[in-house]
Length: 143
Image 1 (cartoon, rainbow, N blue to C red):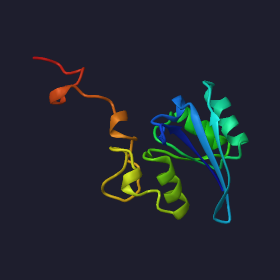
Image 2 (image 1 turned 90 degrees about the vertical axis):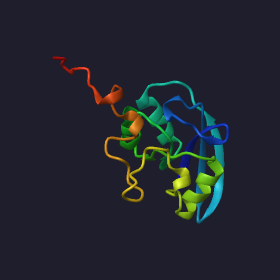
Image 3 (image 1 turned 120 degrees about the vertical axis):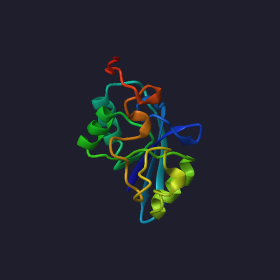
């Protein structure tokens, strides 16, 4: 299996769309057989997805990712596991051991507290429409 993780200072890069480094790890029969780091350059989502797929990546482990890029990757045959954070080496080790969905790798506000390992409906809390303090909305009518 070939797994990729965008890297920033030895941690999962906060936003895949803006990442500058991609670690690609290929494993066979439980052992790492190849490990390479690639420099990412700014390019359209479809081109980036195609490049990642051409590296043989089967699974991308990442933090935030745009819906456009996520869709392009999935169309290119790359499974995307988003809303993850932490040290790259720890996440890789846990992924291969089947324990990568532990709370230490979950981005705050992105996981449903009522059910393990389920993404909140509508994405992360930070992605929801902002409301003014006090619950007022912009179309609130004054008497």
